[in-house]
Every structure is written in C-alpha cells, then in structure tokens.
Image (cartoon, rainbow, N blue to C red; front, side):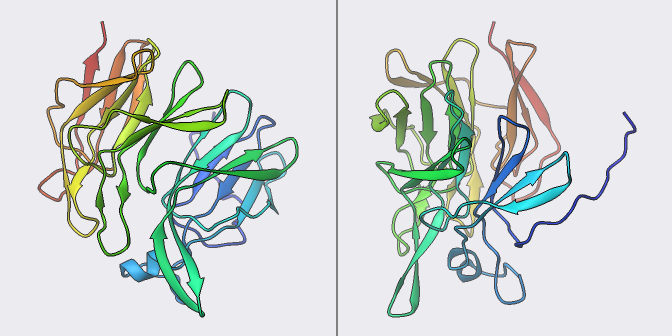
Length: 270
C-alpha cells in the first residue's frame, strides 16, 4: 500500500540457514539455523556445521513481538520445511552435530520435526536418508517429495541422487526413484497436475558447487521420475514458482561459471 519497508523487532537469536513458516493464525515460526562462531561469522565449514541451533521463535505481526517457541529434538541448519494439509509444519533434515566427550561432531541429519500449532509442540520422525540443502514439494495428494541434497558422512560430503516420499496418512517415509544426476541446492515445486518438478541444483561439493540445468518430474501415481527438457541456463540456489496456472518460471541462482544469475525463464506445461 505504501511501497515501503519497516523495521520489525529483531529476534532473540542470530540465525542463518533457518526455516520460516506462516502458522494458521498468521504468526510465523522460525526454526533452527546456525549462529556462526563467537563473532557471529560464517568463515568456514566448522563455523557452519558445529553451531546449528535447536531453538525456535514465533513472530506475531499483529503486535510486532517475538516469543520463545519449543526446542526441536536436534539442532539443524540448512533444513527445509513445508506446511502439511493437517496444519503441521514439517521441518526436515539439515546440518547438525552430536557432542562426544565435549567435542562437537558435525553430521547431516535424517531428523524430521513436526510442529503442531494447536499444542505448540514438536514430534519427531526420521527420513530414510540424511540430507541438507535439498528440494521439497508438497503435492496435491498431500504427500511430500524430498529430492537430492548434500549428504553422506562428514568425511565424504557430496550431492545425492536419492529421493523419498513422506505419506502423512501412514506417517512414514518410502523410497522413490533416484534422480539421474546427484544435486544439492535444487528447487522443487508442486505442479497443477499433482506431480512435482525438481529443477537444477549443483554437483561438485559444498566448497565448489557446479550448477546444472537438468529438470526432473516425479509422478506420485506411478512412483516414477522422468528427466524433462533442460533449462536454458545452469542454476543452483535459485527459486521457482508456477505462474498463470500452467507455467514454471525460474529466477536467478548461481551459474556453472560461479557467478550469480539475473536471468529468468519459463516452461509451458500446456
């Protein structure tokens, strides 16, 4: 209405790589992330992988105030989230750590947290695969597709081809056909016909990601994935939406030359 930005009350905790989801009453749940080193800097992998958070905060836009939310069962940064049809917020995977004899051991997470707004509490399930920085899409049937991401153990970090599906009806995860190329930093979106698209991402490693132009479409009816026409540009860390009810539109991202993209492109589903 005024074409202006207004500063809101800051959170209690510094965070990067957190998730944020609008709750049914209009408040916002912010969960996890990483706080960085003692100077709040994220200079190296250790700063990221051993400072992830289990804390959450809830923002009330009506009063411009934050309140402390419940803790998750495990710390996570670089996880992904989506609202389920039953109103729960699903927060999956991420970079985490465990503490052994006072030493933090970083790892990828298979932990999935489900936040219930009615009870202000979390319950926990586990994915089949540990992963972070992956694509997530809630399809028309209510099931959730989880695709690719960074995974492995801390000594063999790399992108993944693995996909899996969460079924809210059975509260369980099952395997799905793998992608034809291992990618992290991909983007997934639900499609109007009930399928889901997985777009781009990056091969290589976390220090040297090499974006790709591949596109895959997952069909929940046949539990199958097929590779579609590639995008015109390689992209990792980009965003995508369905526009006009029948177009996939993709924005920006990082190219395989290592630079940020300003390009946009669309694909017609008709």
